Length: 142
Length: 110
Image (cartoon, rainbow over all chains, first blue to last red):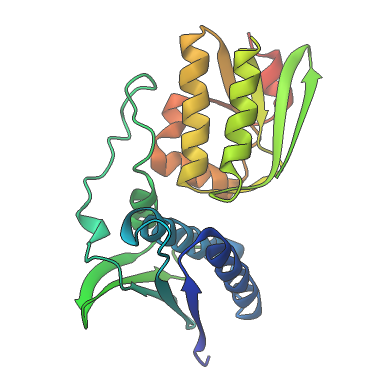
């Protein structure tokens, strides 16, 4: 099977994200990804781009996020890069999911979901930009 | 996002339809807050028509559950699809919430 690829450059704000997620969904359908794989990819992009919007670029100064999605027979590779201040999301302390309702804090689950829904999640800096590389094993995603 | 309220077995059931994400989580948050503020602190959230939930959606549900608990009420979740359930499991919400396979089961439970 040949590799199918999608590249998106989006403005890091809510309308930009919504348009990018629509394109991802259409691509997933055309590339024959399972519903589960499409869901995991959408959620990963949703969480990571929201983090860039909320914590990366300053308010009122939306930067750009580049997304590259490659669908191969056995796996899907998702690369996101942005020009916000350098930050490795995978250094965040995972939440304590055993905590009770009373003490459980609101938030802090986005990166935890990404880590758990993807087969691999890595961060590196390339040319001064944040790069997140995610791999989803298509068998693992059902 | 469409949010519909009805009663089933005399229990208030709130059903959000569509995706619970950053574009519409504030809508459900406001709806649930208003519900609790008016004194309706026992209800079921019917997730049978919820296609998708992200972390901001989880925060909306958690926030509502905390308010209900403080008001000594009760909130249950019903009819999660497989993907929403996966997100709840990874987040540990399966332990925090009362979860039922159907609205019927959630509303007849003592």
